[in-house]
Length: 548
Image (cartoon, rainbow, N blue to C red; front, side):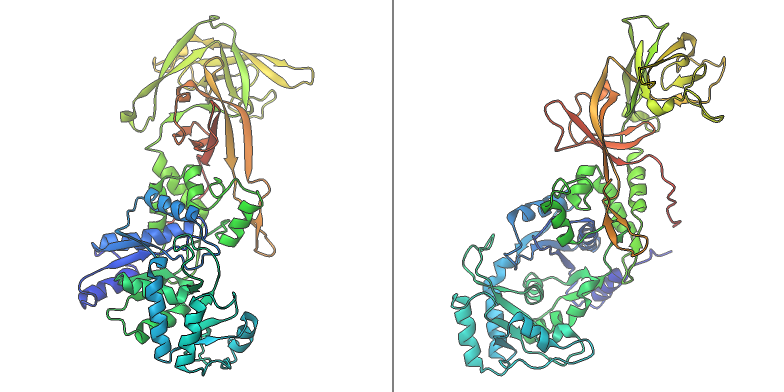
């Protein structure tokens, strides 16, 4: 059976069959460097680079840096890092600002053809003239300026003779078009600001809708893939290239944006979170940015798989975030070592174990992957278990530790609770237990069985760490359906106890904590001997992935 193709692949293969572009496939990923990339951009990256790879073509990385007011080299560098981290390498690196001279020439050509004019209307007046979805717009009083006058004013605009907002260059198309995008859109605006790459050479800057198709054409792009909000802009994309009589004009193709439950990807809203100090910068592990997902511990393999397995269609839809979490678990269960970590420690003293003695128990790093080897776990008289693994008055089906009850310690022995020590407030602070030396794991002991197995760490040879447990940064309001900030999106646990085997681990190391989930050593806050773990994802979920 032939592999099912998405609609973009069908378009590309038809163009190859008809030899539209001489058997070439050349795509591009064209972010504006005005913020950090988010998970929606990851979908676009995988689509643009993925299509080029599938058809043995090329993919450019191009920064559409036409708005210097919002752009910065910090964003340029972060975008490059994100693309590489996802596993892609561009064939050519370009900036729209490299084409400013050519774009200016194209604008002059359109003026000479009577297809562009300088307009003095203010932004508010242009909105009034534009009309509505049901009413046509009306022509600007400056629409019929002569070619000579337009050329003269446009040149003076480029020389800095006018103030910001005083004049714009507009395309002369159709103010009665049912597509509002075609109602004499702005091509150039005045902005006396420093450009991160072009410096102070220009004080007029092209609009995205004008720069984008020409940049694509200059680079020889064949298929200009973008998200669905640009569908209404496609006639304008084509119009500019037609008026400039561009040969082998690129073909714009739109697909639906990647929308996820409990995720907000608005750059404006994300920037406000950063500026207001609600999050720890663009790379906060709660952020939906690629930098945030990377710091959270999500692997590039899991994120790429997620992007490829979410439908590539024109139909709008929302994907459950739990699907990404499912893919993260699937990716990590066979690739990450498993260790024991106690997040809320309760001390246990094994009274019949020799004082001062330490033995080392052997355990596989990942029982499902023997090739990952084994490690030695120190065991002694004093250990820590999870506080909620003990109940003084347990319900009937509580199979963990309780007075007079016996459990197995993972990789170790059976222990039995003999005495409960409390402080002056009645809080349990220590358990006194005994162990059975005949029950050591791996010895084949079959004398009796217990239903509960607890994880633990040595009290004398464990590592103190901080652990951060994350929830969604936004929740959906049940009544309005609006996204509201989750005030409890992170829980910080101090004094957690982890196996001593991690004491020399590097930031960025990932582990599965027995019964708790998958964790990564934070790459920014782990310093000066203080280790911070971020939980990537919990171990289990009620989510059921759709059947293929």
